[in-house]
Length: 248
Image 1 (cartoon, rainbow, N blue to C red):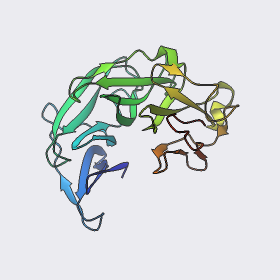
Image 2 (tube, rainbow, N blue to C red; image 1 turned 30 degrees about the vertical axis):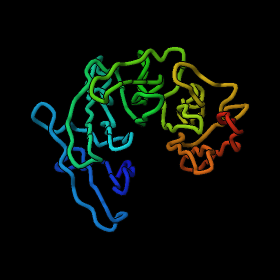
Image 3 (tube, one colour; image 1 turned 90 degrees about the vertical axis):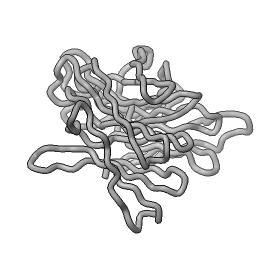
Image 4 (cartoon, helix red, strand yellow; image 1 turned 60 degrees about the horizontal axis):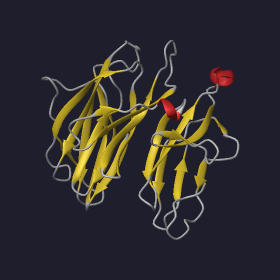
């Protein structure tokens, strides 16, 4: 399992399976809080299932968007690749499929979000000559079917690893980047983004914390605070002020 989300009372679980060294995506659904699950068929793309797991779900009322975790050039760093997605209008019962071409080398999607009236799928890709995801990737859509790649150059470096929506309805994007001097140690530094710009000075800390593992999840709690989590690290935002967004 790679991801899970609730749509009303239904739990959707997404991931991938490998049979004879061929990976394919799956979605399971449960209407009893996970006690029993059933597999939901995902329609093929161009006659076959893509070789990538489901990376994340995004939800808006009964509409669900699922994205493949990796484009066809995610690991071989070919100059252009294709990434799959699926859309459901009925809470994950029935799905349609599609794909986005022209993805840059190393493309991976880690988070799907609905906020401010549109969908965003976010992750990272590799800058020229690099063999790791080092630049933020943002894809946007009004209808969940037609997607456009957004210019993310103003966000600087670092891939987007998680996202949520704060109390004011603004996206909160979490990213990480391996500092050049410690790449061999697999360390990361954390940073918070806003769509269209970077927020170094209002990020997770005054100095970016150096981590052994990148932040991998973000959620907004019932009291409005934002929780960001990695394998060994947790951050919790301050309580929101009335009528204001979050402060870290």
